[in-house]
Image (cartoon, rainbow, N blue to C red; front, side, top):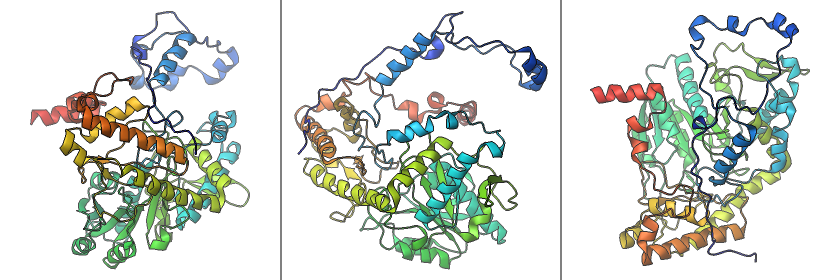
Length: 521
């Protein structure tokens, strides 16, 4: 057995570092840009002439003027105040699938051949990345069982949005666009599903779990009608409970004329074990930056894969990547397409990592991902459920797959310490704050860990011991936990009003205008 540190003496660096816009002095420089040659000036002309009058700045932007050393020092300090997958055990971020990303893949994406690509290059000069994109699509088709893949989405939520756009395009093409105005989802599926549906004008019907912890099949049967556009569902959901009646859900919706969409943002527990098409689904999507091993966090870098069956293939976003036997190219001539989802095409770095990951593992290795994820999770759950105050409600005793939704409710009742307190305290042990659950919290005082295939038994043991120690603290010195974090870069607790009040978290002009309009009513 390996060495397991049960009480890690961790203390994060804390720098009183200003934002970079407040730093520097006039005249300081990090890079001296060489002057433009006369030949280039004559060929390119004046840059100002290329910019319409209405888009020209009245004055230069107020950018910080700093030396290279100052810039390096600033970002090194910020890096010391950050906890990430490469320096801690990221089991706590359930549904996010925080796995180790092989460093050889990082060398691939940092190669000049990729970093210096330009979206306006002629297709003849980008055959390499187009071939990788095309091959990615073929592999993902095999993994999903679907007939067409688009790698254009910038991430999982945009892939969900593309799925809803495709739902609408399909029903409109069949003359039922106005009639089919309802989308059914579940309370335990990712909020991006109801969010995208509502954004595109659909009425959202939400299914809640039955006594087995599964979406209520009878409630689905009552909800479907001639107005049903689609069912958008995850399996297993964020509780880790696999829905073994999923084919009944799909058949029920199909009988009513609706489409079925499988949210497989988290594929880790069913890699090589189940396929969306084999369960009868019409569409699915993957988060390539999660299941396929690109680093995941802080809203990027991300890439989504939208996968559809043959009858929906004509609707996917344009352009698509095609191969005519001699060259790879973008195909824009797709009259039934839902159009572009974003500028340019996909996120090349993530697509290269995806290709390398699939090629290095092969079919057998990819199946092992699912098997090891399930093994790790069930070992971890056995150890965690020995901790006083922690339980696994909802379908107690039922098998979980790659993750689970646990509850600190008993500990909260006994000590007053909440899951949010524990979430802050775990940072003092050198772990990233964990994922509780999406709101609304169906399970009280939730805690959702996910030990993916890349974590060892020693890693899991160390992770469990940290929570065992915090539980002891909660029962003996609850104020220590409630006032955490004590050793983190962030020395004070977060003011949660910044997450709920428009006036404080409005990060764009449009969001601020919404706040103003709302407050004036």
